[in-house]
Length: 200
Image (cartoon, rainbow, N blue to C red):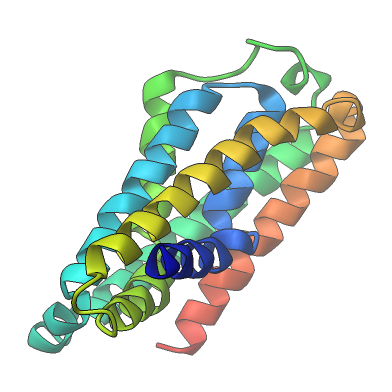
């Protein structure tokens, strides 16, 4: 149980900060657009990445040294484009985003976007996956408990964020609030992309 709680604590703390993926989940939750599927996709993607970390992503990175650079540039490009789309959304600003079911987009698009934000984020590979993997290796006999705790943390976090966002619905009844959120999301995306490029 102690190792399980350790895994839960580390897993939760590493995804707590608002990032590209979390900002997307928050936005979908506020719009009430495919919330369940977006949260499930993010949690399952995290589970895959945590599993990769626990079974030895660091070993793979050592075997394929160029992998980190490829993921860094691919992630930076994706984040820049997504940030640009958020900035365009802020410029166009519309109260239609508030109405449930309107302008929600397809479920397939929402799932693919959530998956892309997970797998094209180099920080997941360079930090979270390798860090969780290295910590899990400190519990050779209890790695499964650590893995289970970290995976559960992802499910708790994403579903809590997606459905908890609904409490902010009155605030985002105003188009100006959506514009502010889109600008913040854009800045988050671009700051992460810039950080990746500067550390290339």
